[in-house]
Image 1 (cartoon, each protein chain N blue to C red):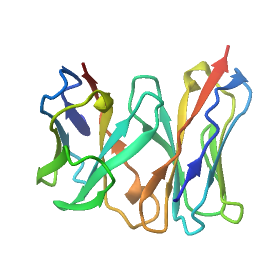
Image 2: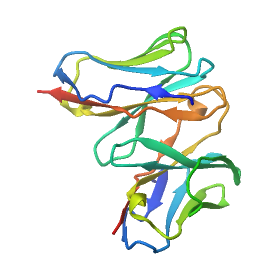
Image 3: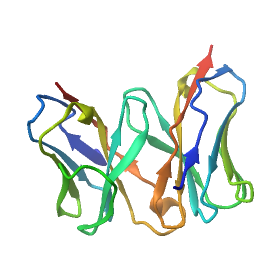
Image 4: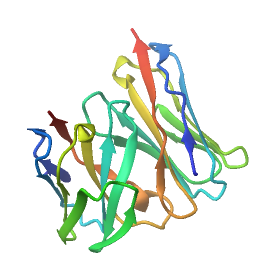
Length: 117
Length: 110
């Protein structure tokens, strides 16, 4: 009964390809996120969705596009992959934003390790 | 730009000693403060959150918050080798966005 799951776990691909990473949460949370963690281990938020609406969109290239078919899923599509896209991508979810304490706690998926050759 | 600063380490602590991890933040209106632990090759997992000034204890872990000094810390008592990991500080700012520090790598020496 994994709370936040991601597929695939590993993704090795060539430059220029298009790929997708899937994320699902069974916690009943309202908000889902995508993070990129580079080789220096710094977590950078890319997107978040609340009730199917984009509420954060950091300055990431438009080659990256989040898609949320329903509240439990937030997929990440990446077009024309580049070498610099190699990183670990984490999906996360939280109950909601804007309230202090446990409601804002984010729960992370296991990560997808993307390597672009 | 709102920032969360952590010493990248590594911080080396003998087994059984107290490990002290520190974090400062720039947004004085920040609401909530979180400590996550990340083992190598794994995803971040929540250790504690705190949103009131003072100390909050949970087992061997104590979070300390000082909003006047814009400072939050995590103390780990009786450090164990299994505590060796990277510890990430995250701060919910006044716009309800979670800002992450770069993490401190902690090594507990047996």
